[in-house]
Structures are given as structure tokens and as C-alpha cells.
Amino acid sequence: MIDLHCHILPGIDDGPATIEDSLALARAAAACGTRTILATSHVSWRYPNDHQTLARLTAELNARLRAEAIELRVLTGAEIAMTYAMEAEPAELSRLGLGGGRWVLIEPPFTQVVGNLDLLLVNLQRAGLRVVLAHPERCPAFHRDPQMLRSLVDSGILTSITAGSLVGRFGGEVRRFALELMHEGTVHNVASDAHDHLRRAPGIAQELERSGFAPLTAWLTEEVPSAIINDQEIPPRPAHASSRESSSRWLPWLRRKRIRRVS
Ligand SMILES: [Fe+2]
Image 1 (cartoon, rainbow, N blue to C red):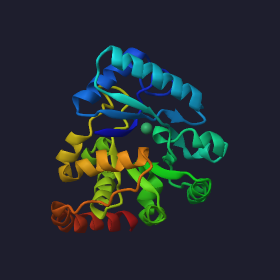
Image 2: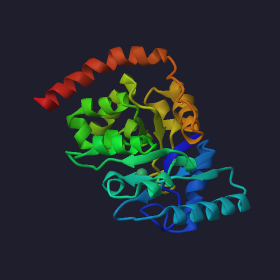
Image 3: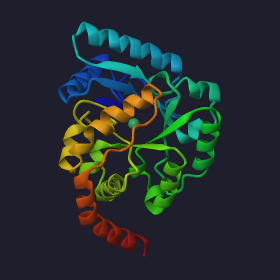
């Protein structure tokens, strides 16, 4: 598996404090079946990390992984806050791509309104970048206006949701929305967004299994992320027989919930 969103580099954000903590997270990820992790440390006004720092720490961590015989490789990346991306130089953003490529992971704010997100995304695309949106299921603005998210997906944005969202780790509202997005096919990747090896651990497959999406595991966690980091065409979502059955079972319930929320 490829974990497209993980805070594994030490000492530069709210992830591991030391390289020993990073190694503990790496061992937990390898035990879960992950073989490649994108080191998506925060790049934001709170954590204004630059690409040189991220590249140096990634190289240091890979050296330790080899020395400790941990079967995991770490690639460079970043989780770029929307508010930071709006002010940053395009040249710097282009050096923060996932796996060094042209796809960037953008984090929308956890607010009721996301301001000029669509304008930012258009500008990034004009600058030659492609956008993966980090955990939109946790963004209140998308809860209020899911059509906004669907429009972004229609315009070529990919979405990466957090595995824990599918099993209620961020509350019932986030779980309901995550399931809705999964059932309607607006999710392209499920990642751990792990920050440590215990509290926000690096599991993905177990959460997909528990939420009924095990048949999509290979597409969500290998095929799509591999295409992203290798700048290849995104493979189409495979037919998922149980998803239709699940949809007929879940969607009326989800819609009732939505109507209740809106009214
Ligand atoms: Fe994150």
C-alpha cells in the first residue's frame, strides 16, 4: 500500500517529535502493509516548512529505515494549507509536490466557509499543478455545500479522505459524510493522515474493511496513489458490486440525514 498522507518527519509539525518516534510510526505502518509513505508534513503559517527541510529530513529518515531494516520507503511531499498556498510563490509550491511530481496536497480550512478555494485551485491548475484535496470530509464548508465539492471533482480535483473518518474517529457527522462521498464515487484515495503510532496511527486497510470498502482497497491505496506520484493517468474506479447494494441501503438514510441537517 501507498500512504499518500502521513506526518512522519520528526520535529517540524504536530507529527513525531523525534526520529525515534518517526521510526515507531514507520514500524506500525509497515506492520499494516504500507510499503511507501508520502511525508506530507504541514506547510502552513503555523509550520512554514520549506522544500529543502522536507527533502533533508526525508533522506535522513530513509537512511535510518534502511539501517533498521524497516521495509518502508518515504517520499517527499507536503500538506499545504489553503491559506498558505494563496500567498506562496508558485515556484515553491511546485517543489512541494507529492513524490516530487506536479500533484500537490491542499488542506482546506476547518471552517464553515472556505473563501476563494475554487479560485486558488484554478490558479494552481493554470500554473501546471494538479490538486489532491486533503480530508474534505472533515471540512464543515463541504458539509454545508457538498455540491461545491462535487463541482471541484468535476473540474479535475482529486480527493483523499482519512481512513479514520470512515469508522467514526472524527465523529458521526464526518463519518456520515465520508461514507456518502465513498458511495457516490467522489473519493479517489484513502490515506492514514497518521501523526504517531498510537493515537493517530497509520492504519488504512482495516478501516476500509470495517466500512465495507475492502474491494476498493487496491484502487484507493495503490493504483491511484501510484498514478499520482508517477504522473500517470488516473485509472478509472473499478466496478464495485457491493457498493451498489450498499448505496441502495445507505443513500436514503444519508439523504434523510442531510435533509434534516439542512432544514
Ligand atoms: Fe494531515
